[in-house]
Amino acid sequence: MNRLKRLKKIRLHREGTHTLTISFLLLLAVNLVLYIGLRNKLPAYIVGAVSLIVYGIMVNFFRCPIRLFGQDTEKIVVAPADGKVVVIEEVDENEYFHDRRIMVSIFMSLVNVHANWYPVDGIVKKVWHQNGKFMKAWLPKASTDNERSTVVIETPEGVEIMARQIAGAMARRIVTYAEPGEECYIDEHMGFIKFGSRVDVFLPLGTDVLVKLNQLTTGNQTVIAKLN
Image (cartoon, rainbow, N blue to C red; front, side):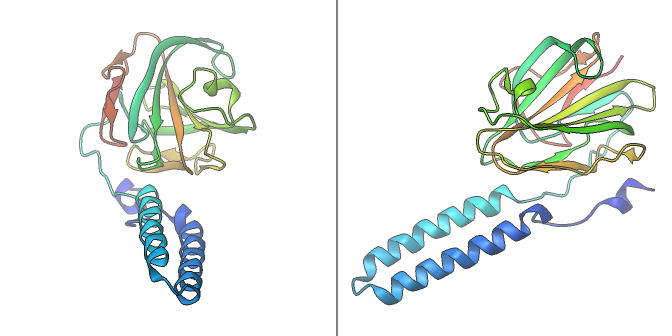
């Protein structure tokens, strides 16, 4: 199926519908009670202003920009998330590959879009979820100790790469849309993580990494590596 036909043109991610609706109703109720019950309206106005700011942050968090890569995707690895590169190093990957890999990690703060995109075109080979801790996502041990969801993708050239969604200290829900055996494309959403979190991408040794530590990335736009 053509990747363009599979895109859903939405401005707010569907994962935020329930959260935003419940939060709006709760904040509205609190503000109405305060406004009606307080003789001095100043505290009610302050609470109202704070509520607008908090709700604005939540709406910003669940925004879902429609993006198209628009370039040749052969051997290209794009950033699976908006955020900042916090790790580029060789590691022993012992859950699937059982060999040395280059790991590129992108940390998403509260102000980033938390939709995750597929980093490569290909076929989903394996998907699994592991329960774990909720340490701060930028810590090195978060990659192996935190709750996480892992997706292995085989590119059209036969190269396997792995993307790992990792929960953070505030994250309590990882959503993964990938299903084994299905085709996936760079322009499609791989999943979503609610609140601060991180995505690791494991690449074969010899891959040409094109980003640097602390570099800001844009999901589905920033090219992070080229496969050899």
